[in-house]
Image (cartoon, one colour):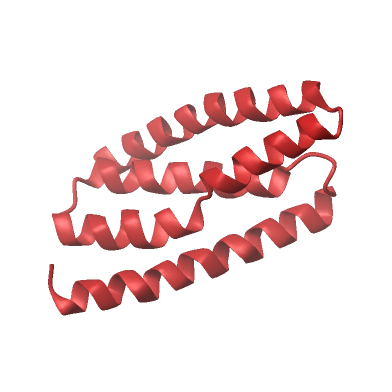
Amino acid sequence: MSLATWVGVALLGGVGATLRFLVDAVVSGRAGRAFPLGTLAVNLSGAVALGFVAGLAVPETASVLAGTAAIGAYTTFSTWMLETQRLTEDGEADRALVNALLSLALGLGAVALGRSIGAHW
Protein backbone atom coordinates (compact mmCIF):
# COMPACT_ATOMS: atom_id res chain seq x y z
CA MET A 1 0.00 0.00 0.00
CA SER A 2 1.17 3.50 -0.79
CA LEU A 3 1.84 6.25 1.70
CA ALA A 4 -1.18 8.12 0.30
CA THR A 5 -3.41 5.13 1.10
CA TRP A 6 -2.07 5.00 4.67
CA VAL A 7 -2.71 8.71 5.12
CA GLY A 8 -6.19 8.27 3.65
CA VAL A 9 -6.91 5.44 6.10
CA ALA A 10 -5.85 7.63 9.04
CA LEU A 11 -7.90 10.63 7.90
CA LEU A 12 -11.01 8.70 6.89
CA GLY A 13 -10.82 6.62 10.06
CA GLY A 14 -10.94 9.83 12.06
CA VAL A 15 -13.90 11.06 10.05
CA GLY A 16 -15.74 7.76 10.54
CA ALA A 17 -15.14 7.69 14.29
CA THR A 18 -16.25 11.32 14.66
CA LEU A 19 -19.39 10.67 12.63
CA ARG A 20 -20.15 7.62 14.81
CA PHE A 21 -19.89 9.79 17.92
CA LEU A 22 -22.23 12.42 16.45
CA VAL A 23 -24.87 10.01 15.14
CA ASP A 24 -24.93 8.07 18.40
CA ALA A 25 -25.23 11.29 20.41
CA VAL A 26 -28.11 12.62 18.30
CA VAL A 27 -30.08 9.37 18.30
CA SER A 28 -29.46 8.63 21.99
CA GLY A 29 -30.26 12.23 22.91
CA ARG A 30 -33.66 11.93 21.28
CA ALA A 31 -34.50 8.32 22.14
CA GLY A 32 -32.88 8.06 25.57
CA ARG A 33 -30.45 5.44 26.76
CA ALA A 34 -32.79 2.72 28.04
CA PHE A 35 -32.04 0.79 24.85
CA PRO A 36 -28.88 1.37 22.76
CA LEU A 37 -30.67 2.79 19.70
CA GLY A 38 -27.74 5.08 18.89
CA THR A 39 -25.39 2.15 18.39
CA LEU A 40 -28.08 0.28 16.47
CA ALA A 41 -28.57 3.25 14.13
CA VAL A 42 -24.82 3.57 13.58
CA ASN A 43 -24.30 -0.13 12.89
CA LEU A 44 -27.31 -0.47 10.58
CA SER A 45 -26.43 2.60 8.53
CA GLY A 46 -22.83 1.35 8.39
CA ALA A 47 -24.00 -2.08 7.23
CA VAL A 48 -25.98 -0.50 4.39
CA ALA A 49 -22.97 1.63 3.44
CA LEU A 50 -20.54 -1.30 3.51
CA GLY A 51 -22.94 -3.45 1.52
CA PHE A 52 -23.21 -0.62 -1.01
CA VAL A 53 -19.43 -0.42 -1.38
CA ALA A 54 -19.24 -4.20 -1.78
CA GLY A 55 -22.00 -4.12 -4.38
CA LEU A 56 -20.13 -1.48 -6.37
CA ALA A 57 -17.15 -3.84 -6.61
CA VAL A 58 -14.71 -0.92 -6.34
CA PRO A 59 -10.95 -1.37 -6.75
CA GLU A 60 -8.95 -2.59 -3.74
CA THR A 61 -7.58 0.80 -2.67
CA ALA A 62 -11.03 2.40 -2.77
CA SER A 63 -12.44 -0.55 -0.84
CA VAL A 64 -9.78 -0.14 1.85
CA LEU A 65 -10.43 3.59 2.12
CA ALA A 66 -14.22 3.41 2.11
CA GLY A 67 -14.80 0.06 3.79
CA THR A 68 -11.96 -0.42 6.24
CA ALA A 69 -11.12 3.18 7.09
CA ALA A 70 -14.32 5.21 6.95
CA ILE A 71 -17.05 2.62 7.50
CA GLY A 72 -14.94 0.39 9.74
CA ALA A 73 -14.21 3.32 12.05
CA TYR A 74 -17.85 4.42 11.90
CA THR A 75 -19.40 1.10 12.96
CA THR A 76 -18.75 -0.47 16.32
CA PHE A 77 -18.94 -4.13 17.22
CA SER A 78 -17.28 -3.61 20.59
CA THR A 79 -19.78 -0.98 21.78
CA TRP A 80 -22.67 -3.20 20.68
CA MET A 81 -21.27 -6.09 22.74
CA LEU A 82 -20.52 -3.88 25.76
CA GLU A 83 -24.02 -2.39 25.73
CA THR A 84 -25.54 -5.86 25.43
CA GLN A 85 -23.45 -7.07 28.36
CA ARG A 86 -24.38 -4.01 30.44
CA LEU A 87 -28.07 -4.64 29.81
CA THR A 88 -27.57 -8.15 31.17
CA GLU A 89 -25.70 -6.82 34.23
CA ASP A 90 -28.54 -4.38 34.87
CA GLY A 91 -31.03 -7.25 35.00
CA GLU A 92 -32.37 -6.47 31.53
CA ALA A 93 -31.67 -9.86 29.96
CA ASP A 94 -34.74 -9.52 27.74
CA ARG A 95 -33.49 -6.21 26.33
CA ALA A 96 -29.99 -7.67 25.92
CA LEU A 97 -31.39 -10.56 23.88
CA VAL A 98 -33.50 -8.19 21.77
CA ASN A 99 -30.44 -5.99 21.19
CA ALA A 100 -28.32 -8.95 20.08
CA LEU A 101 -30.92 -10.59 17.85
CA LEU A 102 -32.36 -7.37 16.41
CA SER A 103 -28.89 -6.07 15.55
CA LEU A 104 -27.95 -9.32 13.82
CA ALA A 105 -31.17 -9.72 11.87
CA LEU A 106 -31.47 -6.09 10.81
CA GLY A 107 -27.73 -5.88 10.15
CA LEU A 108 -27.82 -8.80 7.73
CA GLY A 109 -30.80 -7.25 5.98
CA ALA A 110 -29.09 -3.85 5.85
CA VAL A 111 -25.91 -5.18 4.27
CA ALA A 112 -27.95 -7.16 1.72
CA LEU A 113 -29.94 -4.03 0.88
CA GLY A 114 -26.80 -1.95 0.48
CA ARG A 115 -25.14 -4.60 -1.67
CA SER A 116 -28.19 -4.83 -3.91
CA ILE A 117 -28.30 -1.06 -4.35
CA GLY A 118 -24.57 -0.93 -5.07
CA ALA A 119 -24.76 -3.74 -7.61
CA HIS A 120 -27.47 -1.88 -9.53
CA TRP A 121 -25.89 1.57 -9.25
